[in-house]
Image 1 (cartoon, helix red, strand yellow):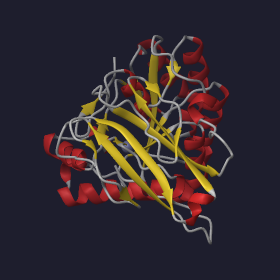
Image 2 (cartoon, rainbow, N blue to C red):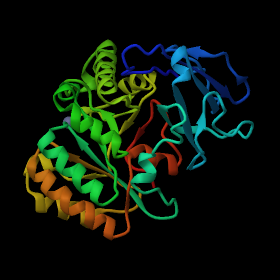
Image 3 (cartoon, rainbow, N blue to C red):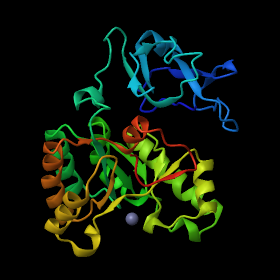
Image 4 (tube, rainbow, N blue to C red):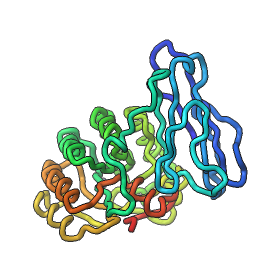
Length: 321
Ligand code: ZN
């Protein structure tokens, strides 16, 4: 685990420190301000965490955090209290944190605001590659917002700074920001160092605009082999493929995209589209309400994974049944 505060208001002296509880090891030492703690060499689950603000800013702000464990989000913990169940061998699958003005109370939760997940009902993940492109992506976000749905955006590092507003909006709506390399490089055809720099530079750009560093990547062209997959794993990331390929980039025909999805869709699918074509937005604004009406919960890939066995670093997934 690593954590950093970003966008600190001018004149505020504040940092963050954090402590993790690993199954079998108990509480490790505190780490602070971006230093890594945990044990990436071992498979023992991370069971619970504690966090708190440091410096004089700790008198002005509260730090709230909660974890996704055993398919459900815990209540918010704050200012050094433990979040997560200890001693039961339950792994933390997700994490949210929020800094609020002292005494302002529990932060608004984007997941709750956009509808919680019912694990007994069907769910699918809509995914969009190669963007964002604000004119297209914002139409997709409008439809997701109106239908209380979420999606995952595998974006290119080259598109991040020019579309910062729409990326912030993704996070505000509970959507997932994810990594499609910086320059659409085929990772099975470049060196290990280039893979790391393509993924890390994109994660850093995304984190700088929205505060979230992606944990999922999608290999451009779908090209990935065992070796490049292990390099992805070294960054703590999972590779996400798809189970329905709309080929929207090729035919640029909204009706064809709609028909492809509606004729094949089933519980646990990951659907591949590209949010750089207006025809894809035309299809998405039909598909999002229609899939919702058919009873599918539109969730992020990480949410889908969390309810269906999880996603491990260095592994590759094309659906979660
Ligand atoms: Zn692509």
